[in-house]
Length: 506
Image 1 (cartoon, rainbow, N blue to C red):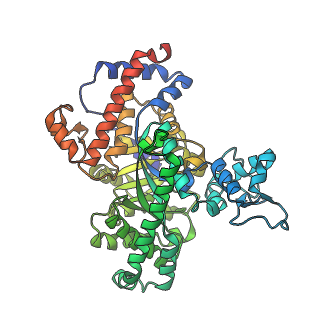
Image 2: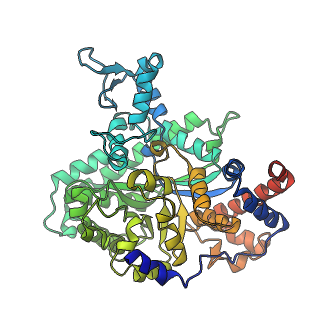
Image 3: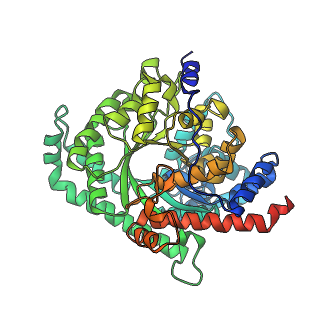
């Protein structure tokens, strides 16, 4: 009944329509071809593979890596595998434990290799008595490959960038947690006194420079390793060298409050002092007992730190819940609190919007404040079994809430951003212009610094003529506008190519 009332309440609002600018002949023809391809899945997939995608804003780096890569690195490291648990161990095999196998032996044991890939990802997942849900299997994968992640962070970054380039993704905001161990230790050492966050900051202040320095050091090492793998700046440079990357510092919410606050405090300071980090997020299963118990306190932690760090931007996981995962009262306010208390600029997932108190009012507020929702269609399907037209994607758009498509954990889910676009266009009747708007939204609502090329669906006044000296001067002053202009140029090249080749004799 509630969901039906939401649909009726929003029915008077049109789906978001671009009011951008006059279409070129190539754009009009490409739109016609796109419409024709919607009844031809094979060619539609090829079209969308080549389609320029502005950004992937919701991407956990450790979850973006395919199981095959983790197993390859485990073999290189001489690591041991616990086949019965589907886990990569942090040490070599002793030869005494039943069910263990050296990772290097997988090459000669395809059954074991396939079993490990299935354990480390959602590939071919089928519920069993001991592995009952996609939700549990998905989140269990992270502990299974955790032992191999830190040593191979640079190779992971290189893989993410190369995959993004092959998928025609221009910019990625990666969620990472360098220096996490020190932050956990600091939080354990300095327990909170109630919610006296000023006192907690004073207690943590002496160790804050070391925590931030550790983050910078680990990030430096990761990027140097990635540059080496990608061979950037050489004739053998990988395509990934051309993908722009920034980071969100992700804090883990399933620890005691003092540890969560230590992570947040250090994360805010990292964003303040290191331009590579453009925002803060909070992660781990939202339905976790601790995450549910302390959710409101976590939002107040953000609120307190916002006063000291008003320029730090937040993208928060909120509403990654469904009825049955938690009691009804657990669905009533997470998105609202993330927006109104924590001050989130973006919401990750936002699945339970229909169960929020005064959901129509919240949708209107998010539309007015331009709080963007990061839509993760594949992830929401495999974890929450929310898919097809049951997904609130259209509900957000009908209410005027900006949205963009993202991958979440493409390695674990075995997908990419093209898959997300394909799911969207085969579920809802999206036009080519609406697809371009989704792509543009990834950059409009990114945390790249600088003024946007877009305002209210139109190019800013200075760039009405995109080739003018006025526009060139505007773009020169803004990293965000430079990135957005590159996307527009990519669209122009893409549309010209589509028209010239008739897109496989359309």
